[in-house]
Length: 118
View 1: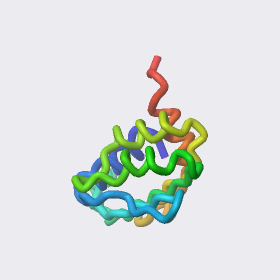
View 2: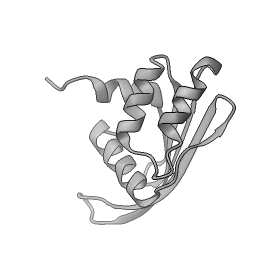
View 3: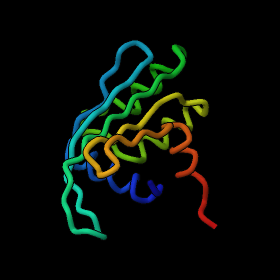
């Protein structure tokens, strides 16, 4: 899946589900659902997005300040999390699309977003 499409689905899920990450020690989880419509086929899909990430114990407080905001998560918060912990370990799962289950590495996704497009 193209980076722009994945980013668009995640942004829509963040807007539709204004809840913060949940925290268990140095692990963080977020999930939400949204509806997306394919530009090619016009079909609408109910997509579930799940984010999980794990950081070091010494960075957990900084990460929680970034991800546990009561107003919910934004893509910018993930970019900041990537700056707090450059070796961010996490995953993105998207269920409900035609390819069934799409998984991606959250750290690599954030690094690609931070690169300026040439």
